[in-house]
Length: 439
Ligand SMILES: C[S@@+](CC[C@H](N)C(=O)[O-])C[C@H]1O[C@@H](n2cnc3c(N)ncnc32)[C@H](O)[C@@H]1O
Image 1 (cartoon, rainbow, N blue to C red):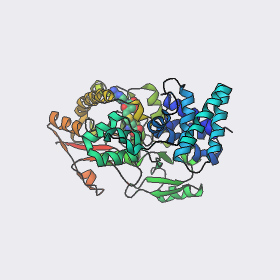
Image 2 (cartoon, rainbow, N blue to C red):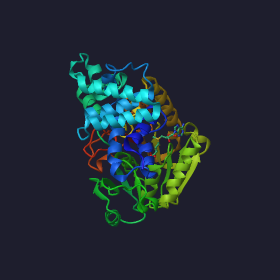
Image 3 (cartoon, helix red, strand yellow):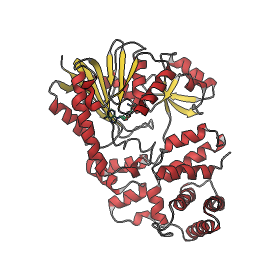
Image 4 (cartoon, rainbow, N blue to C red):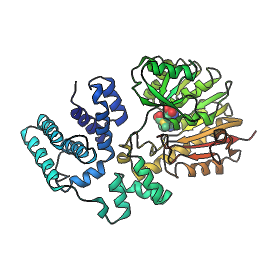
């Protein structure tokens, strides 16, 4: 079995080096059974906590080390140790220190061990400065909540101080795990019973019948998962297919479909009839959709390696009853699940992504039948990619209008758009807009 701090150090080093996503690497580590099941929650805590609080941790560390001269891997040992010392109260400092010194010695020899020992002892002795003394409001929020300054400024401009503070704090909470029950296999009560039989405790979504939140237990690797009785999918992501609301005989186009979470949900809602055409630009991602489809036993999905900016090369205009554009986006609504996103994006990336979104929309709208429904969704919080895109669609397509009915059927207050900025379900922060094409 692997030592939990060593495992945390390896994952944090990969993620901060831009070589993987925290949620995927954690799942891989858990699946590989290299970690004792009793250590899974501590490992998750240290990995998420360290990555989520990196800016704050570095702000403290720079009083004790030269951030430019200290090697990246040494900084990561110090970051995971300081995270445990400052943010967790369950582990005694001497235990954290011993583990950190052993890790440093194993990796870099005696001198590295001595260096880490000296720094951590120094921090213990001197304590940390107060963040409340930071004068500038944007800077203070950035350091206190560990969000890059450009992102705090963007949200302050677009949403104001209260919402920005809430967003930043919520991004530092632990993500919850939601699952979609495959109702083509069985009804929800029987599937929940099957979960309970495997000691997995769940609670139901308030109005999505197939949506459950995992309260206790681990579904990864269970036979229920491998046999296609359920899919791991966030509640907000599930809402997208519910708003698209396909009928059983519909022809549906999913323009940006991989890894297939929404494609397979759409197909399940259509009870294995009608047709679903699922496109993505990357070959290796198409394979992920195909794997999901096989696992879930779905029949009516056809996948295409296709650039969504050129869909009319593959499909005839006016052919689809439903079109989903789950657009490539900046992903700022899933920071809680993938905290590294906030460090790896820049303001410049945001304008490039808007250009791509518009190009996809320009082609995809042509494929909708008269009377058909278009859903545009993102997992981001940025008006340029959400509200402004809605205005772009309305301005350039006079035959499309916003359609609020699909939201209202769930009691959601909406003008045809919904920006989920917070929720008490622990769900991701999505934007969803629904349009109807005139008959
Ligand atoms: C937000 S993700 C889609 C998630 C997916 N709908 C789901 O629920 O699992 C956006 C997808 O768009 C794909 N993509 C990016 N550029 C594209 C393009 N020009 N044409 C088609 N797909 C593209 C990406 O590969 C990515 O898989």
